[in-house]
Length: 97
Image (tube, rainbow, N blue to C red):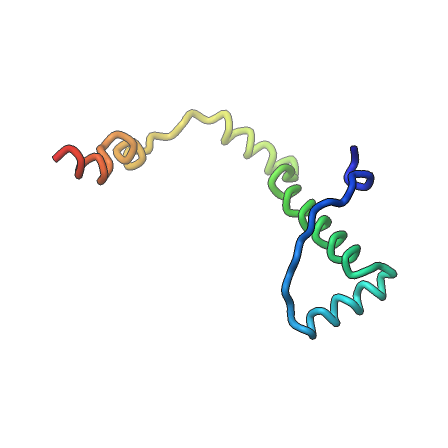
């Protein structure tokens, strides 16, 4: 079932100022939509944009080569991280004096 055919059974309520409400109403009217349609379309477009940033990134050929080289490079020693992961935590030290 797609988003368009799925029955609308959930509500989202927001509080705003009168001036913000007027601005949204004006924008919705200009777009020939209801305020609900305008807000939902705007929010879904922004959500898709945000989620795409987490799933997709684009690199030119030089950047792609550098990215692959970084992935293929052997791991660098990180002594501070190694020490952090191997020494007892403050909680462990408090429980086992």
